Image (cartoon, rainbow, N blue to C red; front, side, top):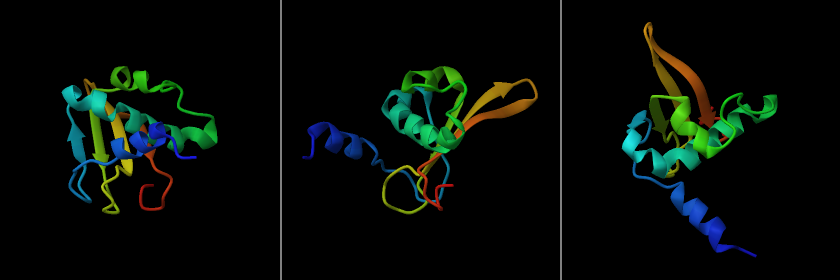
Length: 105
């Protein structure tokens, strides 16, 4: 049986972002994207037991200062994401995520 919740989750994954271009997500847009970014991080770190600091979608805003996403296969779904923090020496990447596809990795 298909549940409405499942359909809404799939619809939430589709966004108008340019294909094959890393797109920054503003902090003001983060509430709309944090579930997707969390799911991508979860998929990427699952083989090693999960990310040390990202255990829930609510951890996403506190984990980084910069959030970038990309659609590599043109299906209007985000395939990969990066999370970085600002440090005195520059940007420090603290997490990445992908959808498990070869292109997303």
